[in-house]
Length: 65
Image (tube, rainbow, N blue to C red; front, side):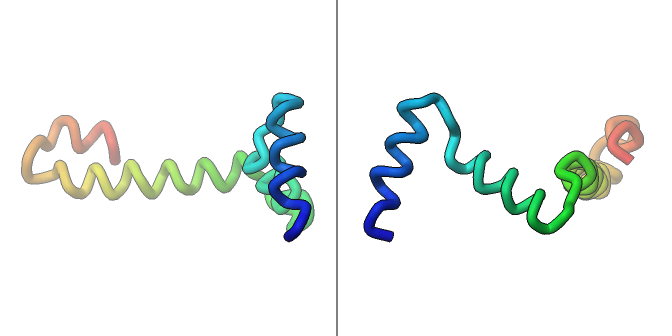
């Protein structure tokens, strides 16, 4: 942990996003497809939003569901 701050600074100076690098490494390590994960999360969000809109605005809700 002693070198973490300088490592993060070096990454940022070179134009890298440390969070993206960590996430990419974890997806690769666990053999996960990030596109698949994003698709699932978006589907959940649309479903939840559609469920909230059913009584309020059925036409808009149908677009989310």
